[in-house]
Length: 268
Image (cartoon, rainbow, N blue to C red; front, side, top):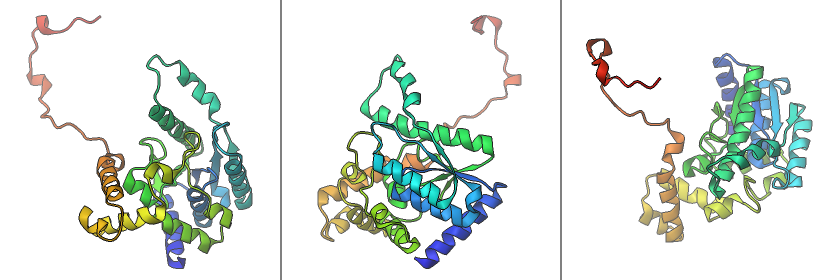
């Protein structure tokens, strides 16, 4: 992991500088991915150029994750802001269209990204994403929420790779072995949502990346129903990693078109 770590530090520094920036902001959750991202950012840019926003939802975010986020920020000596999102959620209770469990979870992720960009815009900083390759391939993230960063620092590392990198960097074992959760709903866990431990998911994802089809992957000893579910999730969520489609249309030269006055809508 030494080479991987050095490349991430070097390439992040190069990417930030190439865009004309020298400061970055990170949403620090107290989980492993944001902790690894923070460490890489500090080593690449210096603590004085890194800001951590801790944005829990009081009542949903665990006290342990909040405490871990605060300890990490203090340890790495980065500028830190503690901003619970509860007050921002209140207004959405009064929208006339109501809500669903999915819309509520996505709302939390998008609010955090709004806060990150609100901060970044005031400080001329870039927003660093904390999604790993497993999440990106599976589409396990919120469009225009946690997937809406300027740079994805660990997006080329599977979740199991992130854990190995964290061990190499000397992050605490309780952080590395903690159950991964986005904390967008009570008792939510990543592996509960995805249907299997990351160790199993990553093996399936790697085989798929090698070009193996559903049957070939299942023949390696994996539950066929899990393999099917994972490959379907990949296909259904590809849109999350792409720009919105632009509908093709031939643009007419409007100065050559005469519209009779009677056909023009009188709206005002």
